[in-house]
Image (cartoon, rainbow, N blue to C red; front, side, top):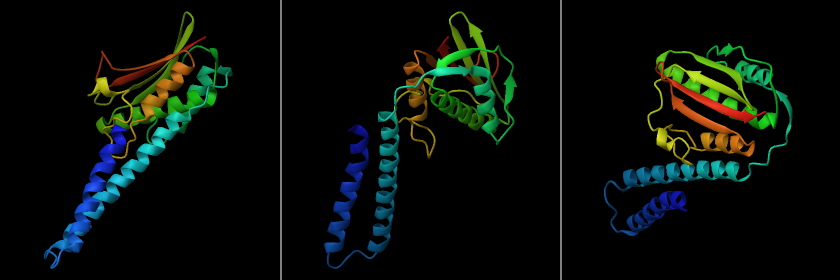
Length: 204
């Protein structure tokens, strides 16, 4: 409701102002310029509202995972090969099979890798992806040499984004998928160097 009102309130206000302006006689000398400006704002807010509703629908329609055996390293290699903007370094890991919805986990890794590459391209750094095993779980990590996380507290706030065309739903969707698999998703700044690391942990 908050997001909807944030878009509908200015649209309603501007529409009312335009209606009042065109009824005036005579009209202000710069009325056409004001009209074009107001219509541009209405178009922008309507477009933002449309993106918000599409993102909300994606989150609301997230299906329960369909679990099946999946070899983790093969999945990670497949996702790494999809990135074409820079060469993603694949860190070798153990051969581990988990029960998961491979399509959903692949979507999580695609989103994490896209964010990592976006960050790395800002600094000219690299991106690495790999997996490791611990008792009872497997961890898939995506590490970048980007500028790091600025607003860490807002990472998983639905519809919060710092990207002009972002929906603010990507990481929320990723974490929901992880939790639906009885796993976790953590993003944090690296301790040893600039950049960020995302860790997706799934039970074995």
